[in-house]
Image 1 (cartoon, one colour):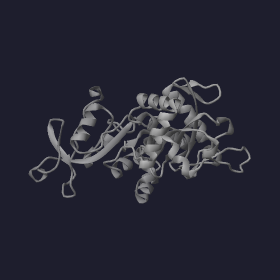
Image 2 (cartoon, rainbow, N blue to C red):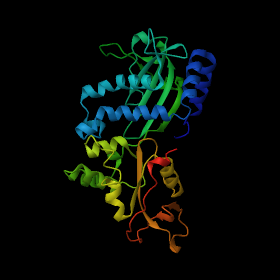
Image 3 (tube, one colour):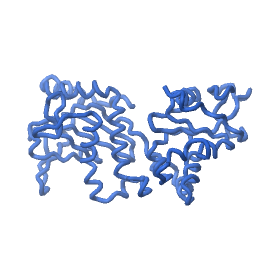
Image 4 (cartoon, rainbow, N blue to C red):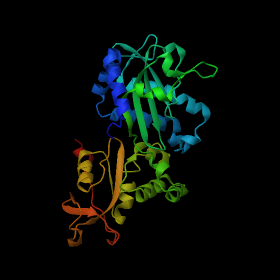
Length: 322
């Protein structure tokens, strides 16, 4: 996660809001306590975008390819999925009760585009933003006051927060990392090659061959494979791990033993449901400055361009999951 990215004005306004609005402070404290890193929030947002894209059935990976009605439905899904994750109680006037306080939830894919209904006046809103193109997200709390809102001319009379009053938002997490949509951000030429094959297994093999040293989420695998047994297509015994071993490529999952190997090689360890692939080579004298990891009884390093392909080691079994 990125550190909080407050301007001085935002920090001062947030402290003032906390002091002047004990309910706002209580909701803020509760949410930071149940998700101190923001990882749970970020995961919900990643999963919700992936749910809308429905890559397994559609092959889609780009927000722009969604229908208008699907984009409109995003806010409802964010609201539902956050409630499922955190088990918020239903509110009476608003969406939730958090720390025994009524809270409405508003999501926008455009920062500042939250549409606040008139009935939220005086209540607290949880304002959520996520952008798949920037791989960033934010969530903050805002006490709805008329003087801080734009009064637009839209038919349902919904309101937006005036830009000069966004510093009134008490941020929970601001401009934090959204788990990457690898298919969206990978090299277009590589992506075209990945999707060129009619075989789901071949597409996955190309994905792990061409997208190395980066976390690849389960939904990316599902979208590329477009098969119900997509996880089986990653594993050994005929999956991508077996297919890519002769090229020296290992595919590390979210097992603790795999995470340790990734960290020792200087790679980002997989989070739940993620994979990281990389070509490795047995450690030699010319690798003296490279980090190394012991795999299958031998020391390995990330292969350099000069290292010829060699049979990759067998990774530890799932039984070593922590």
